Each structure stands twice: as C-alpha cells, then as structure tokens.
Length: 196
Picture 1 (cartoon, one colour):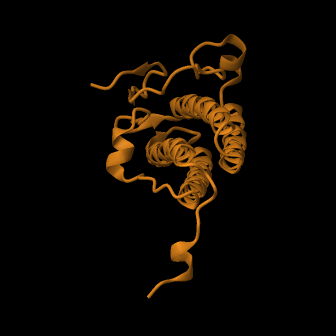
Picture 2 (picture 1 turned 180 degrees about the horizontal axis):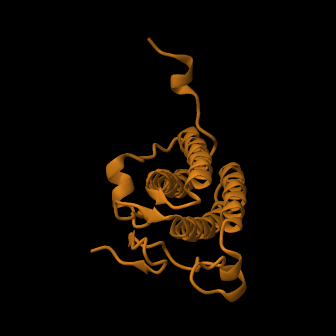
C-alpha cells in the first residue's frame, strides 16, 4: 500500500544544500543531546547549600534541551536528512563533554554550566551564519534555539558569586567560549582538564 506522504517532496533544496544543511542540524542536535546528558549528570551530582535550587534550574534546562533537540531533528527530517543522535554518535562527537562521577560543589556546577552554555552559544551562532547561506527556514529554527540558550546562559550567570564577577577570579561570569569544551573536567577546580 502506498501512503500519500511516501511520495511527498522534500523542500526544494539541491542535494548539496540539503546535505550541508543536514550536517549542520545534526551537529547542533548532537550538542543538545550531549548538553542534556551533562545537565542531568550535574543535577544528580550537585552538592552544597545551593543544591536544591540548582537541581530545579537544571531540570528545567534539561527539559528545554530535549525540546530543542526534537525541533532540530524534525527540521533535519523535513528536508530529507536523517540525523543520528544515538549514544555512540554522541560519545564520538568531538564536542562530547563529561564530568567525573561523584559529588560536585554547587559553585563548581554553576561555573561548569556557564562555561559549557557559553561555548554552545558561540558554536550555535556560528552555525546560524553558515545556515544563512544554505536554508532560511533551518536558520530560523536554530536562531530560535540560540535565543533560548542565551536566556539560559543569562540565568546561569546570575547564580555566579558577585565577587567572582567583579574580580574575574575563580568562577568567572565571562568564560572563554572561543574553543570547544573539554571532554573531562575536574569539579574541584574550575579549570578544565583534558580526558585521560
């Protein structure tokens, strides 16, 4: 039996544009899935007087990242690209991040969350620029996601200690977002360490 949607045409994109757009969307999808896994790990691991409010914030963030990931994947499928965001693909992605198991001090969680979100926002903005030359609708989808990520980053930065904001030491409210996030970090020290 042939269903009417089996032969429905994809958006009128050339093969090259469809593949390049799909790859950009898939890269964003992997980042969002990875971010949601990291967010849950931080939520389970946070320890200290700010644990309860941070767990609530992280729970809200993770739910939002799941929705963003679905929106990204659905757009990829809509243009005829089939993304892979299974566990193996997420773990193999160059942007994959991880923290060691065990308790993590609450301010270290805030610092890590802020750092990772800032990096993802930077990469998402770069993705928007590339998509602007490929597909306007996909660009719009990712622009909306970037707006949500930037709001989350603002919320995370509010949790940073005032002294760190003023002096720029310890837990910085302006993390370095120029490069990819580390694969593994030491929660006892806000400075990231490479994976072993």
